[in-house]
Length: 383
Image (cartoon, rainbow, N blue to C red):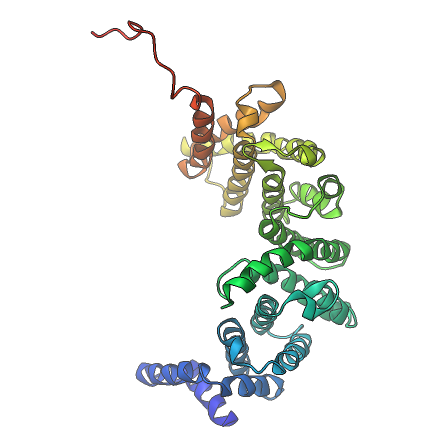
């Protein structure tokens, strides 16, 4: 049966006849829904002689089975599957990236199904940190960073088919797990690797987005190494995209109903200057864009455009999060308005439109008290 499956997967990827590929694909989809897919996929992945296509297909099958069909498993089989997935992840840590990603997604889906207490103290994050911590840095680092990125994404999605009461339970588990996740991510900051810092910031943003700052102390977050790394990352082209995502999530964590939360003020006092420091860079880009529109210089490349979008998004997130404060027109609150005026004046509508939601919110905020007012008779004269 194992060899027949491998042959079918080879046919799916390499046969030149579209009809044969279509028929084989339908047969494999039907097989993926069977209970035998659990054990056979696991066996092929543990077989070092399996072709790469079979490894990817079986890793994808396990991921899908864990997401959708986890309740097929006997209760006592969950621990064995968890151990097997971790063993496979370690094996593929330096192998095919696509296979490793599917295994990480499968483990993340298990975290959605299995209650935190069954992972031990600290939940899934500390269980993974303890088990991967026994491996070399070359194995542990890429696996841990990818897991800490996909776990919050899985916990916040509806792909894992869990019952409503379990989904509600997950919300509290996320809050409890966030400090542990940030602790592990902070320990990865000084690890060597070309894209390590960017991956750390990407995962940091994912945990902030999922937890919305719940359970995180404002002053502690202000002094956290990850927060410092995110603000420093805005200065580097290599990390700007991931850093801007993280800073946007930090801004969202600080606000409530258009104003900064009082306990988050230490963090706000760091975020606003860090974001406003991007204004000269944005102004230079706007000048270059205007010259390009006038035909005086060549259009700059896609990376530059994405960086401009990132800066505009940061200005807009700041303005939208603190709209109620900005509406008071206090001197300290006007910098984001000036920045968003520059965004609105940008010659490319794809950029300028990023500011539109802020202006709409500000208008609503400024006119919210006018709806019950009656204008004096004769104030508006008819022609």
